[in-house]
Length: 528
Image 1 (tube, rainbow, N blue to C red):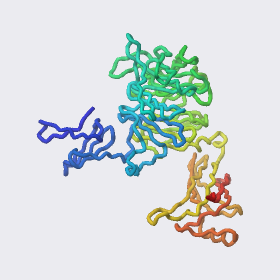
Image 2 (spheres, rainbow, N blue to C red):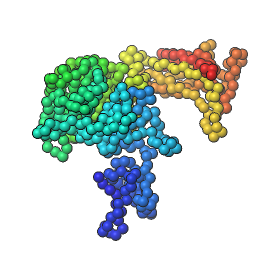
Image 3 (cartoon, rainbow, N blue to C red):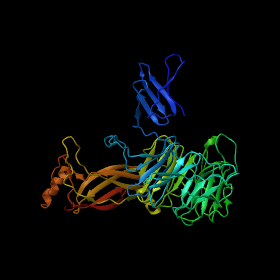
Image 4 (cartoon, helix red, strand yellow):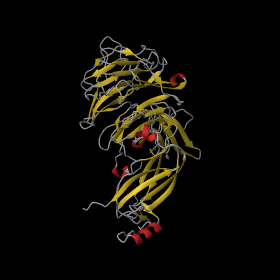
């Protein structure tokens, strides 16, 4: 722990000027040369500013600069995101929170702290999201019941007479998908609890190369995975390059990394959710100045491995298999996020909208079809992958593919303002399509009579593309429609736009004599 000090007598005496809202670990301090009372301090908690020489500090949370070791999600309807941060504990909050200071009015920040220290991995009981397993560095883990306010320390301890267990800085834990009372935790051994950490048993021998002296524990497990197809089909990976499998709940173990590069950090081992025999592994060598990409897949429980890192150029931290489409993989590297649509044969940059920072962890919320990504120093990102998951082999073989266009309920409030100072209420829908190459795509939206009510051109890139439709049409189209159909009365809204009337419509996209169409409906609002 460090403190921030001030002195005015040539260094003879110092006065601490850290306050309760200033993080204890400091990195840089700037003093305004024209006003020494104006100080900016950068620390492990972000940035603080003082205008009275440290008597009071403003905490600047307007920038997303958290460094996440691990992220996870629960399965509530409006699900929560959980994350363990470097020196800032474990926090959780609603996935749909958008940064603003509106919470100042209510007095409660939407994200809440679960635990302090260096925040680590988190597991959430799928039956009761109030029960969370998490902790801080070197294996100090707790079972937290938020509703009851209980914090129970659950870390297994070595029997009397044995050396203390070796726990990695980021100790892996895993709740079994087969039974949420069963918890796994890794030291140099794999430990299993049948009662959520009340008691433990060792179900392996030392799964590493053994202890290695240093200032932190080494020769530790770094990753655990259990197959959803079979209880007790377990995989472990270690910080010294060992990957093991057990097919019998830990009764016996087999080393399966003999044919892989040796002595690297196993950043992930992941049992496939699509095929029982399939398993993925990623290795990382940056701690030894080896920044090559190491990613592998096995189709026979790790007996044989195939490299799937072709085209990647950075150290790999995490691999995630898509939950809906077995051909899709996501990889987080030290320089961003990448996606493969062909089981790892080729990779594409998938970090549009994200800075080029390290991605340490990622997880898919299956029901919401969203990918949560934890980064080094730029906090958490969320992306809708529902359209990505629909990129099947059949879709990718097409020149163009238009995704489903959703129906919408018409509102008489479209284009009007609720308050004189407010913005008009304006509808929109993002319409997605796939193009197998770059080029201009023509868009046309027609009514039931086949009359085009909206046209536009979209500059498409190879891959997923989108455009936004606001349900409006040009004035001349609205005038002609009013003339030809006496049952239609399209009026100009307050925002000077003409909105489509209730009815059925067809969206058509075309490029190089190839076209794709989908229909949608504007429905009447339900009567109260």
